Image (cartoon, rainbow, N blue to C red):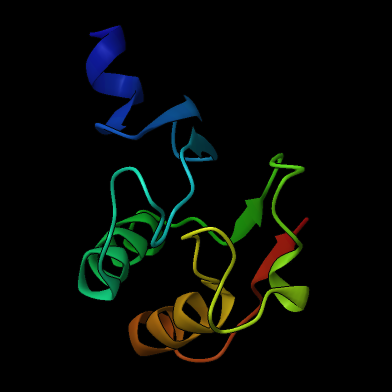
Length: 99
């Protein structure tokens, strides 16, 4: 019952079902998601679930707006990709990433 309410994937869970999700870095990163194709699929699942705001608590990574396309330490930026996926799902709309 409870587990099925909060479960989302092996790397994310709903803190408040349908409203607040928490999890690992949502895109290409060195330990689990090594390819853009994987990252795109993972972001699409998150966005299809209705997530519109991403908040990073990882002090070791720069904010998405400051991260270069090459990324940092194996972490690639996801804001532009998330915006494109979201637009393909819903059309243009508000999406915020808070660093």
